[in-house]
Image (cartoon, rainbow, N blue to C red; front, side, top):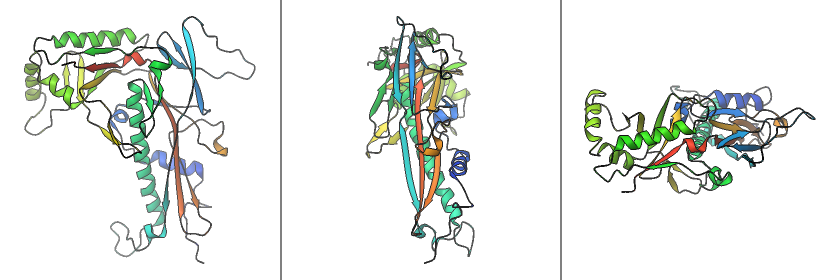
Length: 340
């Protein structure tokens, strides 16, 4: 029997090297990824303890064995333990993926196995990036969902916090929209609780965006912006509109869940406003892989490894991520909606 050549096998790439490879592949940035809103922080355990103190959620630090413990104020604090969700995703390289397939731009040579492997890893990375975007957008709204759309944690319910919301009443021509915007800004400023920010962005559904720019108190300002801030005959001016101290951005992302159903990340007729430029508010915690060799190590965004089947029929490509996005100040993200 001829054994399939595997350039990623012995003498090739270990778990650490495959993991490094998938993490340095060109990143397919999603919108929150482009903004760099959620910073990644590795942890060594597969569960984390989060403490709520006056509306701010914090991960409890580790201390040396026998060292002094952190002390909680029983009157104003509460603690919860959360398991970091595990997200495995596998693929396989078979002889059919390679046999008879020509390399890109190459007349005679077959597509190298290494190139096929890289393509597999790139597609897998994209799926992990989309899953992370889905989880982080929901974390902005104070909840954690898995890829099936099931709510795992509701931070508002867990810590008895109430989400802040502003009704823009955009169906009423006399509504003072700028007053509504000032209300949002003041709520955000109040909930910063020592944090910093450089501005406020609102990701809104197409329905909310259309109502906003079509409102009698906004229409003239939008007409001026679209005629001077962009070239309306050549550019799509729908997407972003700075008004009253908030940048409103149409965000029409829809994902396909593992169940086959689709879900729009921002509900129709709604939006979410949140601060930009914060230092320690939006964090995605990453736990180590579910492998013996990664026990008690600092978690990475994605892990990858390959296993050649003993009969030489295929190479299994395995990836996994264990991430828990947290909005440490859940009330900072203000829900926008219009009741009419």
